[in-house]
Image (cartoon, rainbow, N blue to C red; front, side, top):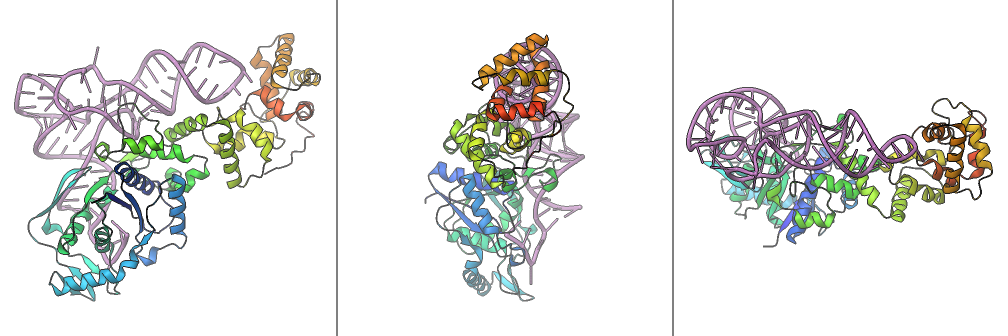
Length: 423
RNA sequence: GGCGCAUUCGUCUAGUGGCCUAGGACACCGCCCUCUCACGGCGGCGGCACGGGUUCGAAUCCCGUAUGCGCCUCCA
């Protein structure tokens, strides 16, 4: 039987990072095994369904690069099949009616166990299993009934899901057994928590994949980071391409305990990926990101600025604050005083061509004449030109800004300059 | 409350009885590089939840306790 895994979210909104991680593990496993990765929408709870959710989930999977085999399937499309099976179980005496609903008769004695691919052997006593509602009184099947049914119908060989489903597994196993279906293998992966050890929620920061995308994380870094949450390759390898992850991913290296989502580490990884991008591609990504976020800054200028920031920012989201001064006049973040700024304006006026190297020569010469250390001389200039004490390289920045604009910023002091908001 | 699962530096993790005076990474601190920031280099801080066993020897095996999380819904 060919390996077949599936990701089965319910359509209640944007894809949460926990769901994304589960999807990723399923995808990595399927690809590693040369099998299929399917997407199934578990929409039997019609009351919680959100209209846009299915599109959002698909868009997110596609951004993450998790390609789905076959079309999306919907649990409610199996409504009739589920009802048929329920009726059959009723006829066979394996289920009974209860207030208009149909309940499955769980065994009262013995145990139900399975060899979990992550947890090892898990065993529960049957007397704890409650008689499960198969069909609600309105005829809609419940999750614990259709989900295993669909797994069987779709030939799913491996059910990889969060550990919050561990206690559902014996129930589903019983259902599968009652209908005479083959049993898939189960792998329950650890949950994701926030910094306080509690379930990851909005108050911990970004929680949906879309949030991270909007903050300027790139998909390769995000996927790499997610893979490292609950899985590791060895004792030191952390940066891995999608291909390497597929090649190396195995369930036996998935851990058993919940992981805390570490935003700092994600940011660090994102910086590594950003810096490793070829310059042109970096500019492409940056531009695409800015457009997505609604910035209409001039493309040529963005491309000119891109190389100046690539080494310096860890997320694309830092760009507007870090390099916004290229696109609009800014108010100095602090007081610009002293003789340096006017002197710099004067020194720069005769620099030709107005390029980083001669600019640097001129400014270093100026510093020397004034008896100032380089940093003492350059900080006021930086502040006047970029509006901040932290910026891309000063000489390169001046070059990109051009002589006219540079001199204007150095000469106008803090007044006069009418910054046009280019956003 | 019942049942289940888990428990290695603050965080992600390596570790499957001797290689562990517990390794790596992020974060943090210090130094170096340096026009700021970032990168990079060097160094530092910091952990096997606790208590009993088993064994010549335990982070690794067993039991108990504690803590956390999950499920116990005609939610998924």
